[in-house]
Image (cartoon, rainbow, N blue to C red; front, side, top):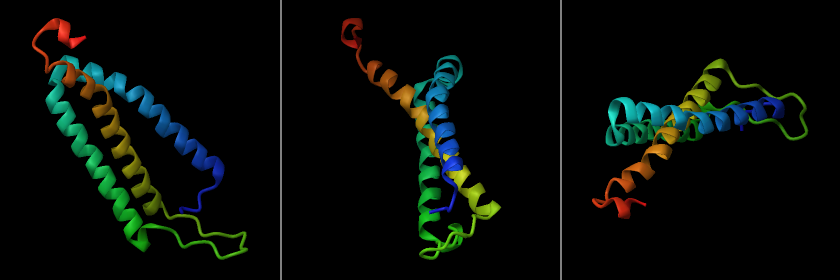
Length: 120
């Protein structure tokens, strides 16, 4: 728990969900115009893996999480700037990686067929 107020947590959630909706469109344009499917899937999977590793490190080390609130206490220690920066970096990596793989995996599967009728 990061002792973040519910309004700030809702804003973070909305930003992540918005990025997950818009970034696949950007990734599709980049994939079709510049790089191709396989390099984008590979790099996106690696970026997502980095984000998941960072989230795992956050959960594993007590220094990366603010002190928990005492039972019945109104005052809670808010996270430090470093703790928030690491959390946001992890969320951004997972979001970008997921957006890159989401749009490309369907196209990669369709490209496996040799006959146009099978691609449908």
